[in-house]
Image (cartoon, rainbow, N blue to C red):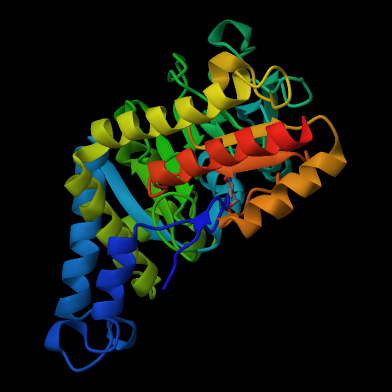
Length: 360
Ligand SMILES: *Cc1c(COP(=O)(O)O)cnc(C)c1O
């Protein structure tokens, strides 16, 4: 079997070792005579998976008992609604940063729930960029400041956590566990698993426990963070199999040497690709401002849309797949998440050189 180089933005590449371990246990989970998928979420086998997934995530993110880890469904998009429903009280204002397509969607949902102040809007700027702390127009006493740490479509990434007074709420869907961050400085972190942490179907929420009391009793119990925290994410049936894969991914991250080692490998992969872009004499043009370039999603353009189409098609015939940019921005997007191998980046770089030689 030949695995291709999968540059998809999400659902995205998973470590092969994780897929193989899941496969080995798929039909008969560790001698239980049934698959983990077929087991009660309250049985001892699943309980061990659930508990380990939570413990590993907390350790990797350096979160102590002040935080609850929740496993939710509905994707990060559900969190766009749940965050303001739970954290934005009547008469209060939440600050939001709009630096791209995902931040914008979060804002749209929050506006249905309460008062929203746009603290900064760089979403229409070219090159794409993240606002600096000094540009933020913050509301005194804001409920929270919402940001997207990695704009998956624009290819920009927040490198330093903003220093603000309000609790930070972050959508980390596309760069969670890709680098050490001061996770404990955030009030709430959420991330769909399918970019960097597992399969689609489970969303991680890490919430500082003091924020749980903000959840009003007037919203349905299933939508309250407090409900899920009180029940250890077993209030109703959690997505057991996706959580199992997330647990295996956390073990794989440990085996790579933890977040510091992962970050180093990610930075090296990204540097190779950005160097290929920057050294192409303008044939390839990065679309993100240099200081905000994402280590996860590398976005660039070619001299014409025709060449972009040709590039993506020819790349696919070299087992380099999933390179088409998001339909809203076009161009090329190479998503090189944790599990993406360096050899795949090297293969892309050499393909880029050949393509330019023939078409430049
Ligand atoms: C993919 C993505 C989302 C949407 O995730 P869903 O699980 O499809 O709801 C939200 N935010 C960011 C930053 C993303 O990359």
